[in-house]
Length: 242
Image (cartoon, rainbow, N blue to C red; front, side):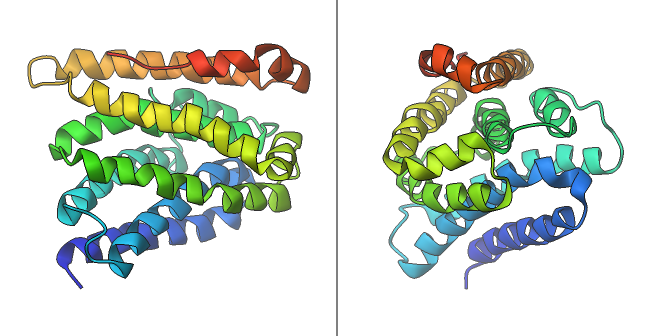
């Protein structure tokens, strides 16, 4: 096993232990949908490289990126668990919604994805100096491959109308995720190319401000089945651009 593989397995193990810890306390229920999804995707990314050594062109670089990326998730989570309830962008709306006690699991998932991809991923790409575009794009298929398992998990444990509907209409769900989440990943890649040492602070602020704006729109769009029917087309317009 390479040192890089060991590092990525450590991230997976950390997520696994955090899921166990959160599941033991009902007050943390809202944090589980995103972490469960993140865990499944990271496991898939790790397994693909371990099962076929040539799957990634630059595995060490990808694993370095994943470690940097994971830190941007764990640091605000650990602050929140330590009692710091007023989280800064890009996670502010996510934690506010999750701690409300009456949130929707599917929205909790989308808010986490928005914060981590739109708000964190461009900065992680910049920090890791990641340039392996082909490997980055390979993750799209792995991400989509875990969607059925994610929806099954949400339907089983949360029983909300969005999760049940997504599970019953898997082809629609895959299409929605491809058009929204994969598009966010590609926009994050483009945004990362615009960041340099001279504009890092300003870029971070702009990314985080726009990510919070997207989060607030998501909460409004998914506030009721009626709102979703009326405003579903707006999902295609949600983006963060430097």
